[in-house]
Length: 473
Image 1 (cartoon, rainbow, N blue to C red):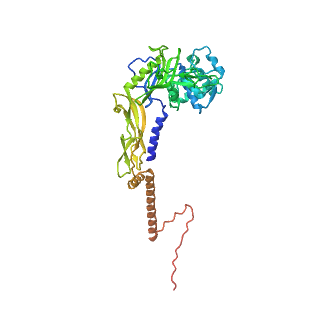
Image 2: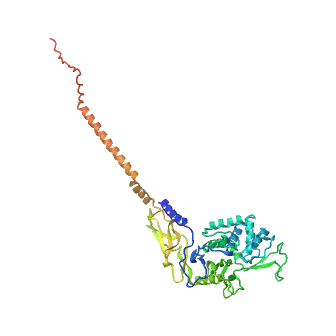
């Protein structure tokens, strides 16, 4: 019986695991016009999508591309601070005459991989991205682009193709992505130790190198110069500064518009937001529109939603009949782990629908922590997740009840019925044989002999003449 239960639970787990692992579909819409072509907003505490708009539409990602370049640098360089990289001269040819952002890393300058990371994520240095691509690609940029696309596929990206490491060019060069894919890449960056420390920095002091040998400012004699973040939401000196916003990357071109990948944390709750394709215009403070759109969405989310517990590990949800126990008829089932979800502030856990996946019964013995079933949680038809249900107590088996049940089960089995039928046939055959033997013995005792068979037709008949011996005189 326990094997059957284990198989049942395994099937439930497989069904959940074989389904594509994606955040739940958004169920909320802000009460204002979102001035962006594509948006994807997720509550990171629950994995729930709060809002999305054209999330899988292909668009030029601009410098959001550098998130993938930075991710690959961190994943393929174990010692960022101790790895030195020399900038090859050829990478500057593609940027000659273009007014693009840079970190003032010069041809043939030797910098650390850590410096490249800061240069890509803070001032959005395009040359830093190409230097990284050359280094990781072994001197061949196409090799690195192949690695970018392979990693994107591994992350589950559905509409992404990289043909450069920085994002200067877009759709015209077959370089594109979408808000959903940018979320997957940003989430991988977010989960990489050390990434957010860099991406959330307001500034970074560039060290001296073979090309930068003197400080740019006398007030900072210990560094060559200082680079600053292009995310003005985390710049304390900007008019739109927000203390709750951190990272991850900005991006803008006339083709892409203003893009922003960011996170915000308030009262212990964290959101990740991808905004792409805001108009290539400045707001009233002189900043790109992606900042104001992101701020409005964050304010709406924090004001209207909160993470609420949906399952309490100390509260039983269901009970299942128990077999072979003489102390209890049922076992109470508790959630194996707590489960929280994002709900509107005016709602509570009662709005959640629970679908139970349980066996008809469970056989003792049962140990505390044994998985007996599962519960699937949904909200308005939207599946939120599945949690295993376990026993919170030990239940011993009654050997008497178990033996009696086994006997009854054996008595009702096909094997037992077959044995009974064969035994009945053997007994019947035995009595028939005994009867025949007794009859034969009785006939022999009475002097009965079986008649001879009749002679064949045409055969001579032997006649026997009985002669009676006369007595002598």
